[in-house]
Amino acid sequence: MKTQVAIIGGGPAGMLLAEMLHSKGIDSVIVEAKSRDYVLSRIRAGVLEQGTVDILRSLGLGERMDREGHPHDGMKIVWAGQDSFFIDVNKHIGKQFMAYGQTNIQEDLFKACDQRKGNILLEAHDVQLMDIASKAPYVTFTHEGQSRRLDCEFIAGCDGFHGVSRKAIPKHVLKEFERVYPFGWLGILSETPPLPDIIYANHPRGFALASMRNPQLSRYYIQTPLDAKIEDWSDDQFWEELKARFPKDIADAIVTGPSIEKSIAPLRSYVAEPMRYGQLFLAGDAAHIVPPTGAKGLNLAVSDVFYLSRAIASFYKSGQSELLDSYSEMALRRVWSSVRTSWYLTNLLHRFPNASDFEQRAQENELSYLKSSYHAQVALAEQYAGLPLEEPF
Ligand code: FAS
Ligand code: PHB
Image (cartoon, rainbow, N blue to C red):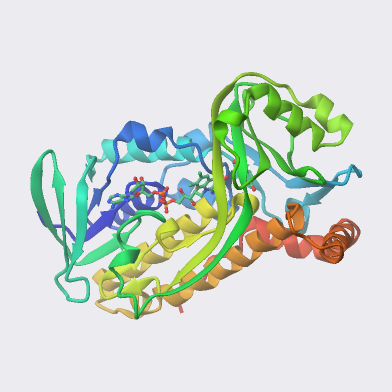
């Protein structure tokens, strides 16, 4: 098999990259380890930056999002039982953000790929990246019981944190930065009407978050200890703990119901540099992980593949490799901005098990400052809305 771009991974990064390349007349093949159902069964992100919404619309992928998604002007923060305060992102920055689940985006991407008869190989195993430092890299894998080889000009490593692409970069080249948090998030999906706003809570019992997927589908999270097990959490225990972490007026407005999905995710900040080696370009979770506190993970995957598709298209159009050569630096500027913001919000909103009294007081003062300072809120709103994508020089 031969293609221009071999894409490893059929999550949002890989599937969106394929659509972007196709819109520029560039051929790609997606090699995905799991089945379509498995990929669609993962419940993950829920908040899209304006930049992501604009990109999806520009590719003709916005019709269902605009019909079923929920635009928000801002989000609420509440702590220590105090009144909640609203950070009006739209007033400060002139941008909204959209509540629309990653699962829906994945469904929309599969549909677009099918409609254009895109080439996606599902349940491909033993994927190996070969000769990535040469001008003729290739990928080997087994598919439908047969050993296959895919020759290409570029390889996009979109295979997430546990994929093989990042590991193909020699250890002496790769520099890794990591912060593992001493807690996780227990998330629940329920077919109940959500609260009107996205609300973050910092409570002595721990962090909590109220979000949504659509007017009949709620998404809630609570901070849990690292050793928490899903089997230890009945729905009733979850709802009781969630309500305990919000002020009474908000807690009383929460409509409870049976969970249709319940999972625990660990929290980490991670960045791998560089995001390019030879003809291999990393994008999305393959290169970086953020704690979901800032709702940045999926949005970073989108900005990475926007930069990468633009760079590959520029190469094929003009033969120039400047944008390819600057891809890693440009993508990492935005990655580090989102990593820093997600780290800031995680430190601001969670209760750290070993926090000293000093650290606890400093956290409460930061929350109080954020509540009272217009400028602090504008700065956070700018980051939460997502910084503008960089123009090519
Ligand atoms: P993905 O991990 O989504 O996709 C990678 C794909 O590569 C997968 O389909 C995988 O099967 C495939 N793959 C892996 N190894 C392979 C191999 N060797 N060969 C071929 N294919 C291979 N972000 C938010 O913004 N908000 C959230 O609330 C949020 N919650 C999350 C909860 C969890 C449990 C996790 C894990 C992530 C969460 N994220 C959240 C982040 C998440 O949305 C990611 O940022 C997003 O999925 C990134 O997309 P990809 O880079 O495509 O990686
Ligand atoms: C979600 O709806 O899943 C969500 C919302 C905001 C976040 C993280 C996750 O910061």
